[in-house]
Length: 419
Image 1 (cartoon, one colour):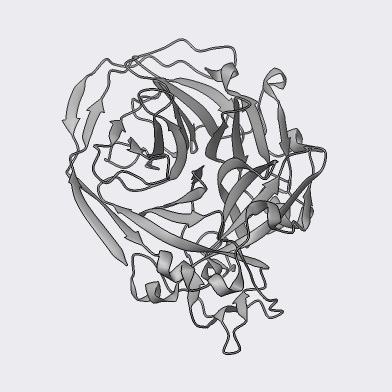
Image 2: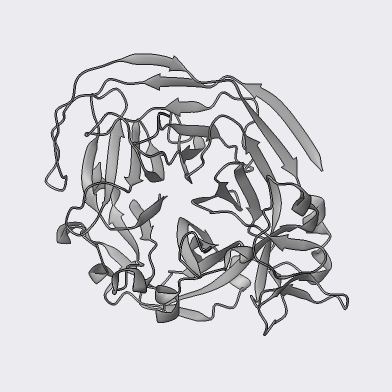
């Protein structure tokens, strides 16, 4: 393993806030007391650990790319805009889909992150799900499986197919409490183990995907390194069997972790998305903090420069933004973030109920007195902007039994309608 360590000063700016007018899609306007302050965030470190040697150790099993995977499930656009808490105005609805009935209903997994890319002439979305624990849904012990991703072919929205793939990491990481957390029992074999994190967001750039790890920073995976795994009817085994077979709780493919960025003084890492820097040509990975209004910490958005090879800078000073809401100054409960030019778009939860939802989309323009809120579907999570179409994609997380009606949906709006 190779490890690089650099000290980075992070500058945080607290902006003015007051009342603002909102568009016809927005919710409420609440006047605020005007205030201004400038703060400096604590010094931070960004450390990269390269785990490519672990991934290379699996090369004899053969690697696959997204277009080479067999997608074995079907999604449907039917009824996507009729799920629980879907309150996007009719004029702003563009497209979306629901998972198959089993994935709509399962309480063992919850979807969180979303990103997208094109590969081999096909257009894909990629969604992260985390294994649910009893603290989330009583009686459910699925957290040992860690994170699965859904590779979704949306080339033809009338024929959407997808498949779940298990994320894995070097079994040697099990001794590192920052990378692995023991839970309920399962059969751990050799070579690789689960990635037991919340996976609140995912981004894609330069053939890599970047998964937000709440306390650690960013986990990295290579889209050219999917590997086939053998069946496991017991759904209890993971790793390399003594006969050489690879097992992954009965998932047909694994995607091994190629490295990770440990980032201090910027957590919690609630979400992540590829967005712009000072110009549209500058690419940044933007993360945001999920902090509730009862906490004393000020929620911030962090931008980490990433180069054309997909390497996050360990020397450049990250951009730090303190976005302003239109209610109480800070933007609390951030679940998704996207940055375009001087504008930061955020999904938030934990707000007052409106049109069947406690979620909002918040847009904050740099230097303005306050942000603008829009109605947004219930259970909203991570954001992804498709640069080619100008669509802003989002997804919701809850299982059917929570509200007695399907809630899970993946949907897109035109970002120009909220810009």
